[in-house]
Amino acid sequence: MSELPSDAESAPPEVLVSYEGEGVALVRLNRPEATNALSLTLQAQLGKAFEELSADARVRAIVLTGGPQVFAAGGDIKGLLEAGPVEILQRHTERVWAPIERCPKPVIAAVCGYAYGGGAELAMHCDIIVAGQGASFAQPEIRIGIMPGIGGTQRLVRAVGKFNAMRLLLTGRPVGAEEARVMGLVSLVVPDEQVQDEALKMARGIAAMPPLAAMQIKEVVLAGVDASLEAALMLERKANQLLFATRDQKEGMQAFIDKRKPRFEGR
Picture 1 (cartoon, rainbow, N blue to C red):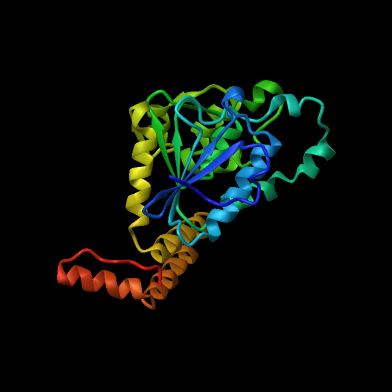
Picture 2: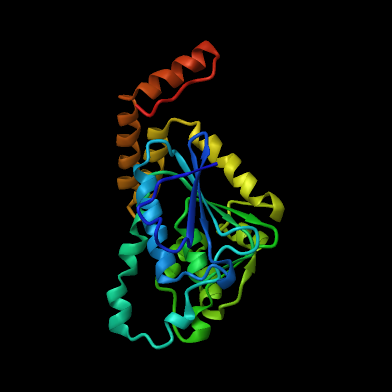
């Protein structure tokens, strides 16, 4: 397991990034003593990591995890207690989180334990969520007098619908992994000890696919979800047409005809 280069190596290692081979990178939150609370330092390092991974030609899929005990138990409340609205505005969290939101490569969240508040919002920035049986998800901000501010209201309602979203947002109560899966928030539930391995296995399978097709699928799904059906279908057609200009399309179809394993180059 080799470390990916980072310009922020001198900063506290609140985010660890490693290359797992076969086109997969693993990003791990590293504040176990604080249940991976999303400090400003952690958020900055996380944004920087995704910026670098987006540009790294070796990486075709990314797994994001908090480790075997907790994913992320929300924002750093001690750092928010005395903050005023202008300070919160000036933090520009939307800029810090933009590299995650705009990452062109498939991202899989591997969730064990708590994914609360900002932790749940972070998981919802990903494309697929693999959760352990003991995982739980919550947006408990209302219980401390605030509300989600990193997409929790908007991504949650798009994932689980108005009525489930309102229940989570207005009660602040957590839901377990299986209930989250039934709602549509979680993609797959596995035993806790298998979460990271399952996410890495899935990531390697995706990394073996033609990367330009994977990027186009992600782009069209995210762009089309808020468009009219007619506009979204147009985006889909154009992206599909574009892929017929790639070497990987020719290779994939020829390999299918030849009954052999294709070799995709991302061209």
